[in-house]
Length: 620
Image 1: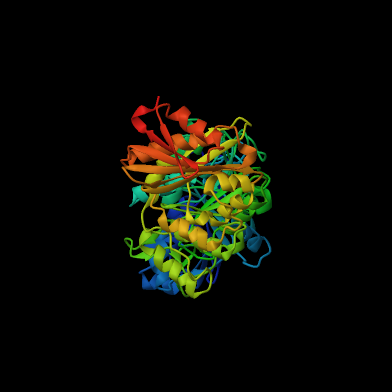
Image 2 (image 1 turned 60 degrees about the vertical axis):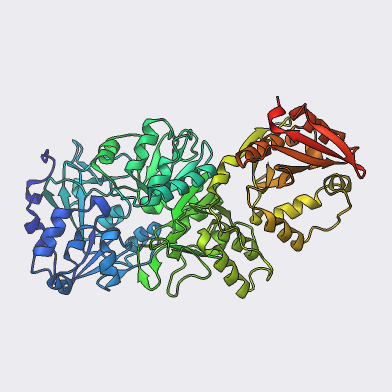
């Protein structure tokens, strides 16, 4: 270890350095995997340390002392975030949680609202100019170091030198403790990979090429990143870098070329994972580490167009309120900067946010989509800030939607076992209509293979998927956008109203096998709208009866033909041998669609209409 730049009089042992801390001191300790373990142990062993107040953002090593009565008498812990290893102590009331946005912690130190007498940090050895790197823990450590009256630094050659605003000069450090030891490893275990992978799949459907990502740390974010391996030109502006980023860098998924702020670099505040990621960020100019008051500032993050914030939650209520830091009255983690990144994404041009969570907890016995947040649970993100919510059962979009729509969106992605009870609770709260049907109590993951996409003749992209009860308002808007003639061709009589009761009647028959409707959706500015619907329903003789309606400004673009092809694939999968359809004689365009797909189809007149019979084995 090269310590030649350090003044010899400042080179001491851990015990000597710690002995300079006075009784009653307020001590800051560096964060997460960058915390100085050797110094922490020396602090805990020193019996002269009395009435010491410790401030730390993310703590690991101190968890070893939480059952030590002597330690708890001498030290009081103030944590800005509760790590998994500190959770038991938090539940037992052995630590004090400070609910603060990470972006605001540096200001708490700078303004002396939280005064600091000493800071224990871990750094890389100094370079030839006397600069040491805070490495994988810049976050709030930089401010803690800057504002402490005394700085004690563990100098560890295993600490990476990271690029960015991460350097401390030897003149700013009072005591140097050379000590080499491995950095803390923190790779999350993923007990239910199937659920996490399904959530990652749905999240990946929302992520387009070229977006800039902010994503948290934990089991779900780890799996979500693995599901982005087909994306291109992703950018990174996030709180934390983990091992899950490495394959995306190595395979060229992350290039940071489309970013507006610091293009070409992944911006972050800290790094947590294994030795592999520590080696990867070491002296790597692809990364730019800076303190949390910059990286986590919503106005700064929003300087990136198409910023997508992905965060997790403990539970979400039917109105969209999100709890992320407590289980009832028990503090479980921390508010971090979820709300700030969500607001930054909302401020970003083309940006949006995603809350991702499993649908259940405790082996499927408890729903995480709840009628109301648990008693004592804190609201980390307000209902007005939430955009997308994702579980392993799908995607709910809440932004700009009413309470009624939110209830149906969230019930649709809840675990099938809880959908009915959630709808009943919503009825009791007068959130929804008293006759509202609950979403079908079945896992509809099989309908994912029914989704398709086509580029239309006008250059627009149309996505096709099965219709859901959550589409009632969009379905209504589609109906009222049609001309009377178009409605007549579809229903054979004039319909001037599309009522809630009509929609309920439609949903009651959908089972996505014997009866299914596919909708074609096209983006209009920032919103997708229905422009076509194709349906089939079980008929006689092992056939399904099909019907289509396409909005007039999209006629002649092959939409009905595409929907017919998609419906045929689904019908075959469900054992049907063919289609039948009833068409008005002057609806020649629809007849041509059937004849083109099924040249051998037969037809006959029945009560003023044409009845068409199509066999699947006779198609070209």
